[in-house]
Amino acid sequence: MKVVLLERVKSVGNVGDIINVSSGHARNYLIPRGLAAVSDESNEKSVAHHQKMLSKKIEEQKSFAMGIKEKLDGIVVEFVKKVGPSGKTFGSVTSTEITAQLSTQGLEIERRQLVIETPIKSVGSFDVRAHLFEGVDSNFQVKVVMDPAQVEEMKAKRAAAKKKAEKKEEKA
Picture 1 (cartoon, helix red, strand yellow):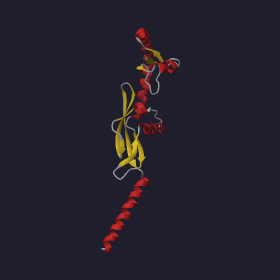
Picture 2 (picture 1 turned 90 degrees about the vertical axis):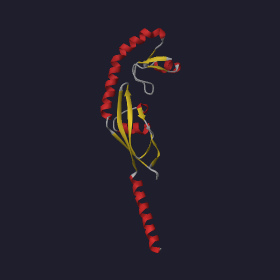
Picture 3 (picture 1 turned 120 degrees about the horizontal axis):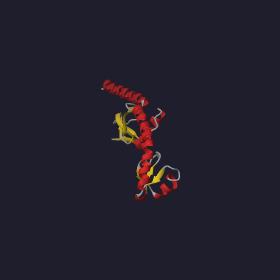
Picture 4 (picture 1 turned 45 degrees about the vertical axis):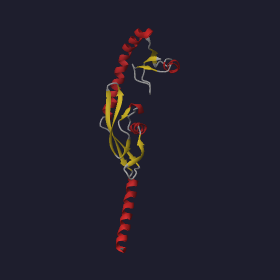
């Protein structure tokens, strides 16, 4: 069923979007709560009317997204992860983890708004894009560093291996 969103609905779309949803979702949730209006051939005039009414809301939502973009641009989100000997992390940094980290910094962004080009599975810096609204995108960095406790542990192992090699050389 095609509907026009009258409000921003999490995990569905933004104000003014014409989307296809299941008829049950539209009839039982979106329309009764005033979040959407039916959009079909017979209601084209009403859809055009809704679009005009929604233009103000769309502009408000867009300006809100621009405010978030200003805060988000250039920010660096850092993750401390355990790393294997090859430099790969145990598991990857997910969009859920990134949104949780951003929310601790006061930026509420949905997981589905993040665009991660390549999976984040190693130590380093990665570019992530947030699609905040139609035509409003923000780029920021995700930095993955090795756990400091693990770094100390690896240094201790290397020192022990070096001592063991020196003792072998002395005996030989």
